[in-house]
Every structure is written in C-alpha cells, then in structure tokens.
Amino acid sequence: MNNRDFKEFAPENIYHVYNRGNNKEKIFFNDQDYKAFLLRLGLSLGFTEKELREEKLITMPYSRIRITNINEGDFKLHAFCLMPNHFHLLIEQAKNIPISKLVLKLCTSYAKYSNLKYKKTGHVFQDKFKAVLVEDNPQLMWTSAYIHMNPVKDKLVKHPDEYKWSSYNDFVSDRNLSIVHKDFLIETFGNQNSFMKETLNFDVKDGL
Image 1 (cartoon, helix red, strand yellow):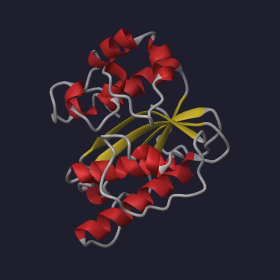
Image 2 (spheres, rainbow, N blue to C red):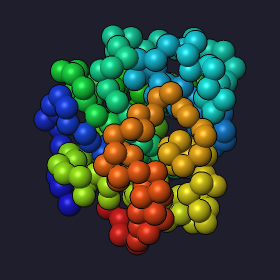
Image 3 (cartoon, rainbow, N blue to C red):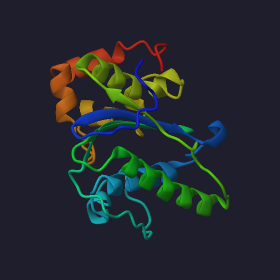
C-alpha cells in the first residue's frame, strides 16, 4: 500500500486519514461520545453548530465548542467510520489549508471533551495520525469499501447497514448527513447499486 504517513498535503487530493486511541484504548464509550466527535468533525469541516444540531445523528446537549479558521468548502468528507478505539475519514483537501490542520483541531477538541467527561488526563489519541494519499479510482473504491466494512471486519455487526456510526447508510438509504459528500463516490462506483455490490463483496480480511 501507499505511504501510511503522508504529510505533504495538497489541494484537490483525497486522503484516507485514520487514528486510534492511545495504547489502542477505547475512545468512544457511548452514543454521546460518537455524537460529540461527529459534531466536532462537522465544525472542522466548516459547518455551523446550528446546521449540525438539525442532524439527528449529531445533535446532543448544548456545549460551547470553538473550532475556528476553517470555512465550509475547505474540505470534503467522502466517507467515515467511527469504531470504538479508532476512526477512519476519507477527506478531500479542496484548498490550501492542509488536512493536518483539520485533524489537529478535531482531535484536540475531542480529547478535551473526553478527558473532562471521564476525568482523565493525557493523550486520548496516538501522537500521530496516519494519512494515505488516494492516487486512482481503484484505490478510492477499495478504501471506501474498507472503511464501510470495518464494523463487519471487527465483528460488531453482520451487515454494514446495521452500524450507524459510519457513512454507509448515507449512500444506501434515505439518511442524508449534510457533512458527507456522496456524489463523487457514487459516480466513481457507477451508481448506488454498484456502490452497494462492491462494498458488500469486499474481502474483510484484506485490511491495512
């Protein structure tokens, strides 16, 4: 596979970004934690808190969160999956602001939330996130399928549509999270049916 520590980010490139909990520990313990991460992800993508609180999967009790200097359109989120001890994001850098800035803001804000909630100190995530540059359509399709089949691979569910903390249902059902840009992946696969077929045919043993 490609360089797993790619850091020379450039506009119009798509990256598979992932990180796990420090010492492989859990980072999400309940629904509120997943929602807190998605809320911060949405803010990091430039959406307003008002817009995000209209999303059923994201809305949570009010809290003051400051994630600044990122505008909607700086990045495009093509897919995601949040697992108990790690996360996967398929992100396009649309402009000159590097994806590393988004990931730093996202992880720092979530770590503060988690440490405060669980009365802990220290690192929540491993020090360095990983980023793989997506260089062609076959790799893009492979990465999308890998991300969406992660819950099946880890035996959390038998079918990806049973797992709500990924973007899979935004592609195959009427769920329509505003933070997910679906059109590009659907176009790459050909259509919605091909997306579903190729994802479900993915060999879950063929991991990173």
